[in-house]
Every structure is written in structure tokens, then in C-alpha cells.
Image 1 (cartoon, rainbow, N blue to C red):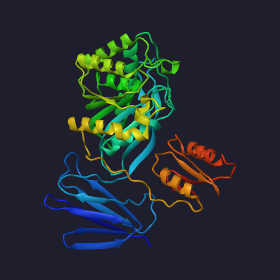
Image 2 (image 1 turned 45 degrees about the vertical axis):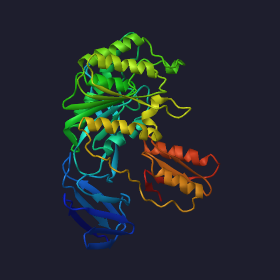
Image 3 (image 1 turned 180 degrees about the horizontal axis):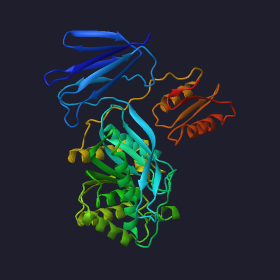
Image 4 (image 1 turned 90 degrees about the vertical axis):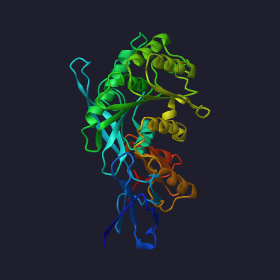
Length: 429
């Protein structure tokens, strides 16, 4: 028989509550009072208004049934300061209908996007994030989107027109000095993303943030010149345009003098605080040129906190810093410092990342069990396949089918007949 029990405890300034979840039991204690309930499912979340949240509620939901969401195992100590706590994050594939009046016929194009947000039934301010050139899907943006969601924002990672499965086409990149117009076109995607998303019932429209990588970073800068309503901040990862990297020329952009002037032009009109992050080994423009972008922008009046990250690992290029899972710990402190300075640290410390507690499929080798545990930490779409002696996994795919196909390829390299046993954390029969 299924059953549900709800326990709500109000944490006041003069009281410390400690909630401890240890499968299969749950215990909650205050002074000399203590009770225990046997469960198979528990979920902890904090609710209340943003900001200080002086009187958060701790709610533990219990069920004897098998539910879709995984068991959360954590220890929370609720005092005057709000500590790190756990909640589920939702990843949702959506389409953003974006209008482009600067194009003949003023088309509305359907753009590929992924929303990352806390599963807490609360409204959160929006952070709209656009890609660089030429990304093929929004999945590399999910590391940044997840970190923003952990910090109290609803993040939407949007593919610019003509990239991924997004409709339309941006004007082609050129080296004829049209950097401002290219930046403004990218900025239009951000403005439209904010316009569309602020109507969602999980978005707080009172504040918004623009984020971009590479060409998208330049677009985020341009968006601060003609800001959408209630824009409070912008973040640029490796903001740039005209790179000659794919032509075999490192640390080079075409018409660098014109591009530096474009940064100055944008800086003269931008008054929204920004965070700029570049890696020392970003060879799409080079650290010296990145510094010149900043000097031109800030010298003209633009507000930006300029951060230079250490080189990414040997064999990688720092231009992809934002999409490297092991580099999150490098740039996240820059993000936290910036949000705190702008009074935009909505959840501090960030929400704890929780992973599904799903048993490894029977018959996996020792290596396979380790691989499955690692698979559970990955973001969607993802799949895990196995045979009697081998296994394969894939993650960060645009669709479950894409992840399944790649997992099967990875598993079948041994020549074995493989079976998909998990898709997006859902066991397959």
C-alpha cells in the first residue's frame, strides 16, 4: 500500500533544526524529541521568498511506493544562515519562437532550447544563454546553465538561428567591420528569449540576466546596450568574433583594430554590470587581445569584472572552458563573487547537486558498475547499454534516441550483442 506523510518544521533564528536522511530510515530531531519512519523515498526542499529567506520551511515527503524521482541522501542544518541544500533540477527541451524584425518579412523562427531550473514550484529570475559559433546543439551550455540554476536562476540555453535545430539563419560572419551588427543580431536572440520566457509560470519577470559564449558573449555585451526589461547583469564567456582559429591561425582575429573599436562603441553605451571570463590558453583570440577588448570597453565607460582563468588542461583550448565539466570549479568562484557584488546571489551557497540512487543493473562487471555510477552523474539526454561482458554509455545528446544510438555503438565495439538498460535515469525492461 502506498502512503504519504508530510512533516513541516519552521526554522527560527533561535533554534537549530537538524534533518538527517539515511536510507532506509529518516530521523528528524529537535532538542529531546525524535521520531523515525521507514521509507523508500524522501525528498527535501526549502521554500520561501528569495533573498535572506529568514524562516525557511523544511518539508520531508515520504512514500512507500516507487516514484520517478530518486532518493535524496543529505544532511541539512538549518540556522540563521541558509546552508547548501538539495533539490532536484529539471532539464526540459523546449522551442523558443523568436521574432527578427531586422530580417526581411520579420520572420518568427523556432529556436532549439533547454531549460534548467529547480523543481521547487517557485518562480526564479531568468538567465538567457546563447551559444558561440558554430555549436551544433545546446548541451555544452548546460554546465553553465546548471550552475546558474543551483544559484536560484531559471536558465535557458538557446541555439542561435541556423545552429542545431533552430530555424532561420544569422547573417554570415564577415571581416568587413560589421562586428556591431553581428553582435546586435545575436543580442536579438537574447532579447527574444527573455520576452518569451518571462511568460512562463516558473519565471520571475522582475529580473533577468544575459549570458553568452564567444559570438554569443559579444551578443550578451550588445544586449546590455539596448537592454530588455529588468536586465540586471550580463556574463560573457570568451566574448569574441572573427576568430581565425579554424583557419590554423592561433591568437588571431580578422580586423582586430575594428573589433577593438566595436568593444569601445559598446562600452560607451552599456551601463549594465557584466562578468567577463577568458582562459589564458584561449587561442581563438589570445589573452593579450582579450585584455585589449576589456580596456576598450571599460575605458569607454562599460562596467565589467574581467577574470582570466588558468590554462585548461594540455591538449585542450581554453575557448571551451565553459563546457568542460572539470573546469566548473575554476570559473564558478568568479561567478559567485560577481553575483555577491551585484546582490544577485539568490541562493548561497548553491543548491547541492543530487544524483539518482539507482542500483546498477545485474550482471555488470566491476568496470561496468563504476561506469554506471559515473553515468548517473551525467546530464541528459543519456543512455547506458550492456552485454554479458561489456558496456557503453553516452550523455549530453539532443534526444534520447541519439544517446541510445551512441551508447549502443560504444557497447558493441567488442562485437557483443548489447541491450539498453537505462535512458535518462529510467531503467528499461
